[in-house]
Length: 305
Image 1 (cartoon, rainbow, N blue to C red):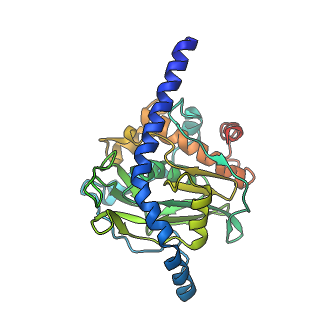
Image 2 (image 1 turned 60 degrees about the vertical axis):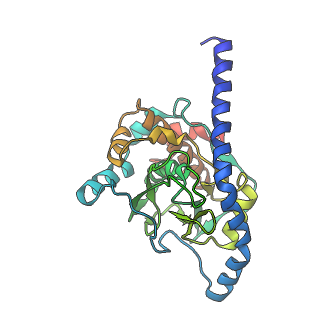
């Protein structure tokens, strides 16, 4: 590819990313207003009840997807997503241009829980960008421990104001009622809203409430309060989508899970490429442990964070 062609391609990619983030910013502006205005209520709730929202907290109130897998089909899909071979991940590497945003290093006090580095995820079930990111998060976390209790929902199509959402009905996982165990890290998730439109706010019904400390992190290190937001032990963060959710459009959970086994598929390049960068960020927080996760390929990506 000539220099002119590369320049044109780079310009087109930047325009696509800018358009994607602008669409997300409009959707997230209402959520940010609600998030900031709710800080006082959060503090009061913490003083009264000492509530700390973890992965397992909060009832599932979202609208379940009618097309989501169940029973043995669900088990099969989960197994494929949580057991992607290291060889396949290494073959995908940086995603060959499919990863549009990477973790960014921050200067922050260490984020820990239970004596281990903490990976904090903040998102919402209506959000297609969060939907896309969760696939990669699950793949990456499975390299360091075991995640269970996953259930399927879908991103929203219309918000409480009657406005159409980008990438509607993206097939997603929710972390509500899931559980994660690892000897290397602690994973905390906060799904702040469901995928159920709330006409009174023009947004979505509330689900899990972040603590004041979690709210402070997204306000300080997030990009205009964008979700998904992930803090990797206070070492680096992701704010906003790492790849275009359109890659998953029209696909079922089973199809996406199966495509992960093919390093040349567009799904694998986007999801596993993102998972490799997430793994690299986690490895920086765990001092490159374990070696089975922090491979040479993963370590090579750390210089880009």
